[in-house]
Length: 187
Image 1: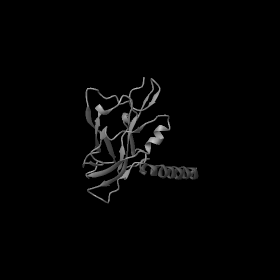
Image 2: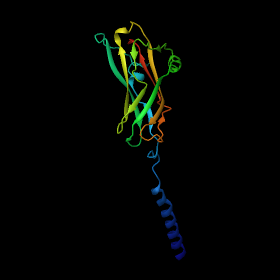
Image 3: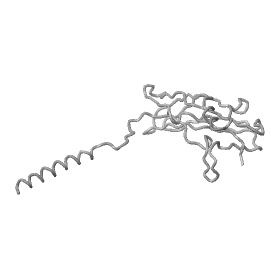
Image 4: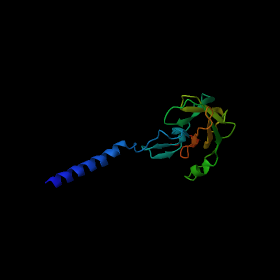
């Protein structure tokens, strides 16, 4: 009898110690030490899926014929566990290699002509305590022809922490490119 009590006590102690140690584990995914990542966010300008019509593809850019031009922006996102107190500088570039993947789906999108748009800067800043930087884009709607299928493909080339140059800013491999599609509405 004493022996079985001793065995039960020993087993209970071993189980208590064994299961109690998992309470000290870190959560399954601890991102607190993750390096900041620069990426493009999800946007309807980057393509849509309309389940009601079954359409998958470009966000149709209709424009307002009464407005000859407008200024807009494409957002860059700084994803990090905490908001940084640092200035971030991101270099972007045009990336025409994206057309091959897009057009492989049966479309015939080409580069938007320089006469129709302008991007005033290829280096974008993200201010301290902010997570979004803007790439200014000017679009001249008056220069759009009746038919067109254009894209404005952009990629993040590099990112740097201006305040602390030794801090690594990762350029996203999954969301480091963006293609703004301009096509008239298809019915």
